[in-house]
Image (tube, rainbow, N blue to C red; front, side):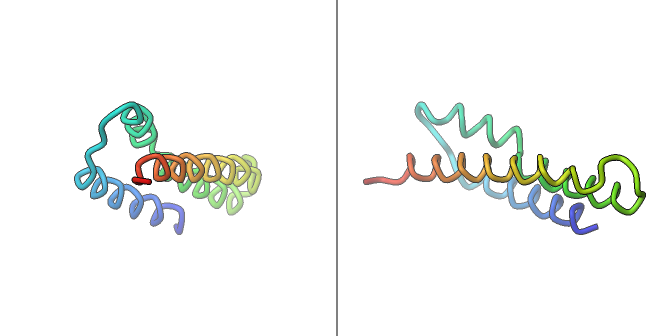
Length: 89
């Protein structure tokens, strides 16, 4: 339940952020790719799958948290890098 709620919140916040920011330059392609891939939503869905399989008792259970954590780490690093590149010196 918490994974589904987090996914909805992240989708709504992501759509608002897309309307506010216009990106140009070389990093525009990477920013658009990350935005389309929506790693935040994928992370919350993997967490939801982990919870559902834990309750059901089959299908991997908490092993689904490993790719969720790795995806969150990679997307957080990419977002920090994009922020660093866009900030003026």
